[in-house]
Length: 65
Image 1 (cartoon, helix red, strand yellow):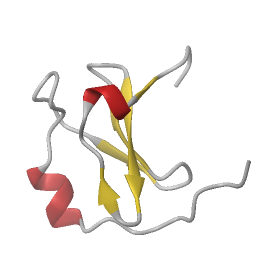
Image 2 (image 1 turned 90 degrees about the horizontal axis):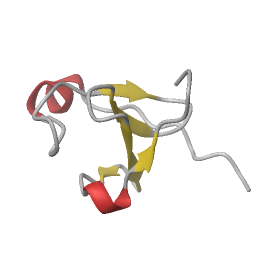
Image 3 (image 1 turned 180 degrees about the vertical axis):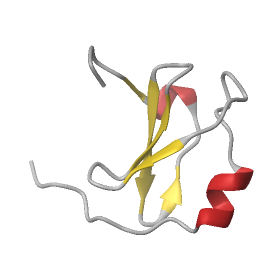
Image 4 (image 1 turned 135 degrees about the vertical axis):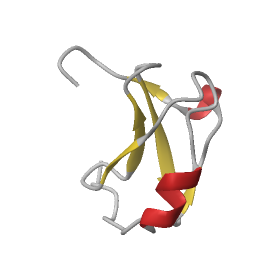
């Protein structure tokens, strides 16, 4: 499987977006092209530059992530 293309996320967007589960802050994982909610232990994908903020589309974070 190929690695997702690393895209930059506008910092202003990160200030606005929150986790839909916890309403907590998100961090951007550029290498994996995901927005990470440590509180919910979920990683939301970014596809074609668009964050997919649906819990059913998020992947569960593994141990140590």
